[in-house]
Length: 438
Image (cartoon, rainbow, N blue to C red; front, side, top):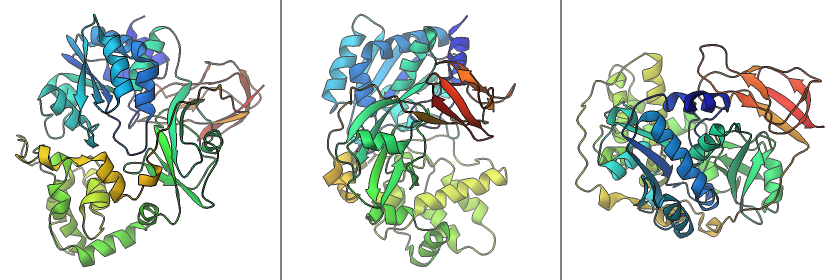
């Protein structure tokens, strides 16, 4: 069995982003394989812990991928400030064709377009993929899962950081389906009476106040903040209010554009132009929406650049949704050229944390070396890009650890789901499987 089939059967997906099924990504040809260890969301540390703990498996997963795609070089992108991670991966790379590339401590150094350019000097074409310039990029944890898949071990657990308003911020490994409530308990419990969770980080994460929401294959961490925190107040504003504020107050200062990382790489992303459409009542919005097409949704424009605290990122999200609904394709320039001030406009993580008012939470989140085995797991049937899995079990079934319990429909984009622990299936519906330890 080849690596592609092993990775598919193990249910490996991108462990640090949108969860694209990895077997499809490595079913290609490329010259370079890059491990993304940039980890630039403030307060999150799980990628650094992964590299410190499993550097040898990371390199082995990269070597297996390089062989599968025909690549001649492998590169691990990691921030220079992550000294212990750098030391671990540098040692693991010795006598291999994999090397370490040190990155600056700015946000968003982990954006694929920025990372590929920083590491290889190549610019991905507008609307394109890293493969268009001969590159395959995966999160560092994904490569470790590739190595495990090669050995016949499926994805059943996830590493994530619990940070923010908790007593003892920590990075821990838990079975898929573990509730955030239980993860928070292992971080010493809450320090706020009215918590809101930013799942995936402050900048690009999704907010919820449901502490019983489960850990999935794509969870990188949770930042807990009080509901009264300024960032949370902004995140909780209804979309109609966000747009109304922008329509009335945007003065076209361009700061959102001038700090945009994609604009600084030379792509035609101009959030201030998209903001104009909030006031349009006639024609023209479709044209101006194109300025959002290459937006990476990093949130820097909304949470850092805008002096009036408007919502250009959200305006770009809406513009891209409109373009998708109308099947409007990018028709702008295809020859990006980096801005001459690009390096001078990088936003340091400390500066971003200060702007976000989270410096008090900017502390270490050391690895919790403890076997965590929850009594009950809630396993969403959709944990990757594509369609949800079809359940392969029914209530009352006994399952073994690692057993397949859900698969995508034939010819559908998705990833196989396995039981993280041995137990009894207590409930099954179209959204999730509830598994209870036997």
